[in-house]
Image (cartoon, rainbow, N blue to C red; front, side, top):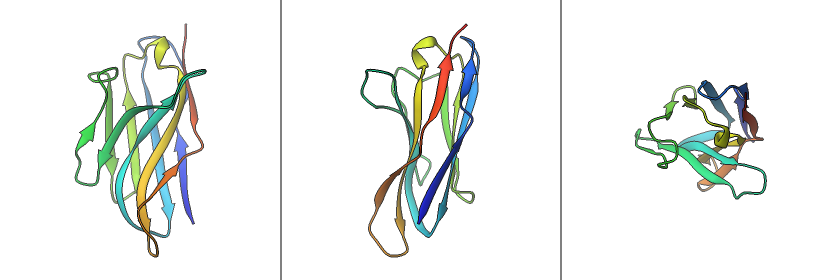
Length: 120
């Protein structure tokens, strides 16, 4: 059984910062990638940032220069540092992990989501 536990969402004023964390636990053999997606009301889920097991990252232009993604492989945790937040960053943020359990093939897992609201 794999669990993803997210933390760090909340309400912040425009220009402010938040840091999201997502820790994976369970019978994990190997993690191939971790990251974050978000979904605003009435919109499709979109990529915010992903990081591979080797440390390579991919972030869309909409957050480049403002958001940073990192991971701690020993802790099986991915972080999203969000700076210079804008109202349009308001969304539910979902943790994503691609991993293989001790018996199985690589599979996508999703966190329960954490609300980020940017408003004055």
